[in-house]
Image 1: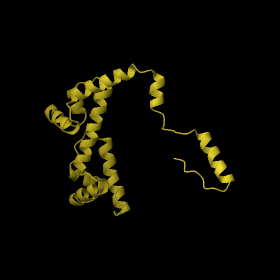
Image 2: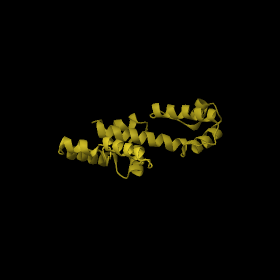
Image 3: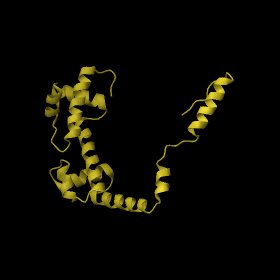
Image 4: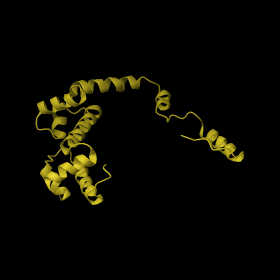
Length: 161
């Protein structure tokens, strides 16, 4: 977020952003967003882009694509139902936009994600757990011991990541 903007304006912009997050399937023209924020349309569009780095329409598009990807990955809903559930008015627009953003069609995305999930199902759980652990190169107790030794001999303490 932009540090040069008025905190009250940022709070108003966040209100509009939160509404888009919660109701991304609805239409959010700039006029509606500006009224949620209590500022003019031009000021809202300019300030939103400055604060969040993207125009409001692109932000909403990103949220819709993220939601569609989750539904494609985690449910058996038809692609058409997902398109309407995530705010598109036509399957063609949804498919074209999804491909433009992700590089693959919704069907291709679903098949690839299913294949990944199937392959992960063949990996023993202990390996998956190990892969998701934090990248610790030294035990916490060892870090504490080294830090205590450094303090006792007067040298500078070791930087611990």
